[in-house]
Length: 372
Length: 119
Image (tube, rainbow over all chains, first blue to last red; front, side):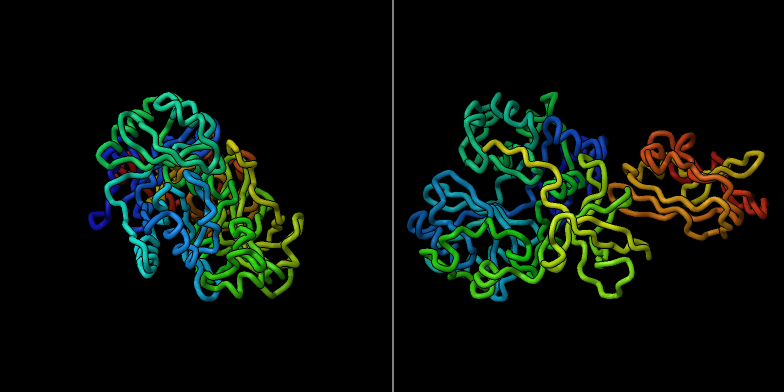
């Protein structure tokens, strides 16, 4: 793994006994000795610490916040100009066909927009944002990104800085954690309450160790991160969403505020607007749905879906799937025709040559546990 | 007891050979969440894929180590696949096979040789 990039926490992962794997060009911990299942359950019961430093942290600065926000709105179908100071919002870059180039988090940091993008897309994303005029796009390479997720996260972080407890879901604040000046958001990718913490790289190991010193906190790898987000009904870019899926097909309508839709004050004005606005008004031909396979066998990405046990026409495909430790059974997501997308619809997934029933289920599989 | 390079163990008993996977294998696989076993009465051929194991990470296959007839399977694994992780050499066994050619056992490793392989 010598060609792989390392995060500032690399040596700590190794010391903690992590199994390191290549992910988006980085050597990343897929699991620790606790194992994926226990790591997953621990995060839902107490708190898990994730290293997500491979993700891209980007500052977009214009003459003021409004200028940077207006520029980004030409790439992203989200109300960024109307985002409150120190508030965060989910969004995505769209292409001319209405497909999704990457999904991301945007924060209003008073004089700039702070953007967090996926590791595998960060190069193209930054190039894409640099096409904007009137803004300066800077990748932050001297900070690590940690996520502390789970019901005990607030108590753990508030011990270091009491202001952590005052934050609500999707708030952003500057906190001093273990002596380090951190940019913290109350958000995450697990369906649990929690925080994402941008910390100076030089302070990252000491902060991680201080967090791990708490009895309730265990290190959690990418394996459990995936099963947690899957149970939480959250999309994984490159799998559940990509350039071939539109936001409406993906069920991400909620992320496109009214002001950017037809008849809104700033309707359209982003790539693929014609298609996306039409789908928002009239629906898409297919939809991303939750799927519960019957029995215990997981149905993973790529499993073909059929309307009946005999029909020869494939109607859809599973885009993410696996075993849900909290659900205590297999869970999956995939795309199906909109007329077969109603909750409770029985479809069939083909597993090792056998058609097994799967039930369309509303997402998330487990209720989200956010502090609103 | 004999061991295969595929990390299966074979324990001859009076009425057949009990087969499971080693602790090394279960550690590599991670948490096992589903095991599909062959049918009792099935005639199987050496190297035929007859068991599917799904861990939280991936699916893998277990091959019949010898020719024979499946005489018993561990039904407890259907309800509690974690048994394979918890007690791989005991309650986590997979199936019992009546060998049609017991000499096929001879090619497999002793425990000492197996431990050397995984060291």
